[in-house]
Image 1 (cartoon, rainbow, N blue to C red):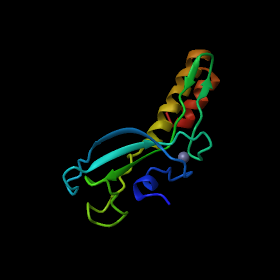
Image 2: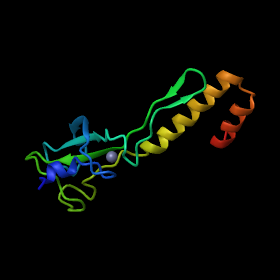
Image 3: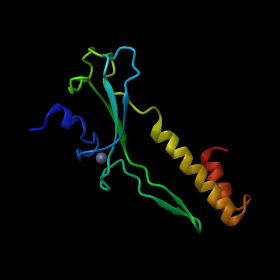
Image 4: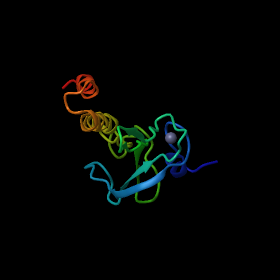
Length: 134
Ligand SMILES: [Zn+2]
């Protein structure tokens, strides 16, 4: 039987324990004093949300992308239940737009690698640019 603290550290996607990336004070105006927010990262390579590193072109490697989530921890070590309203409507803060931004960064890198390898006017670079919507 896991404590709610341990349970909150399990990856929401694959139920493997996540690794702590950083810990900071909650900036939420509704949070109790001493409330911390922990950012966690899933280290499981079999996680459905894990994107392995990709090699693009000759020497460009696009770093992998691991699923991240954050949890709020009260000063006494308890985790506010979702939707409890005790510390605001969102006890679980999401990392805004992280996967979308990462995808854009990957697309851009892929374009740069293709342009670098084949020239900016090459078919590869042009196709990627079209996919991104440039
Ligand atoms: Zn996971």
